[in-house]
Image (cartoon, rainbow, N blue to C red; front, side, top):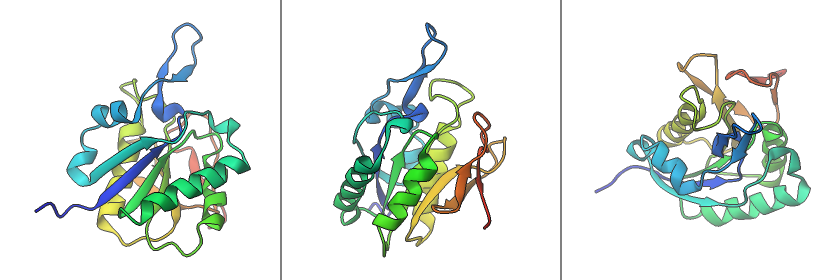
Length: 183
């Protein structure tokens, strides 16, 4: 019998789902949810995973109507699984986490937003570690809130689960770009 917890990963795009575009020097969202799970099979050792695309969008394009869309999609999943991970671009990840924390009051299960500072096709990507840490946290705790899971430092030693309403992005490229402010 499989005693692992089950999660759903809802994808919204961002650097975590991107590859380097060598023509422009930037990144472009290219990975499907299935491709990301294939790239990071370690997640399946920690939890049972369901995965689906909500929309491929850059985080700077996310606005209030998207917060409501995400909340509805999260609520569809929460009654079927033990937690939800949302992959999200880092530019506005903190804003989305704060909005969702107010929309999704009274949670009994975790909703974690996860991003990446480096695209998933790069050997130096922080995406796999961030996703695996979020999955492990859900598997090992009874957390029931919205939070952010990102690197604690520049190394692959730890990730932090940070509060949705007190966390900000304070750097544009460091793995430890997210910090808790006044908390």
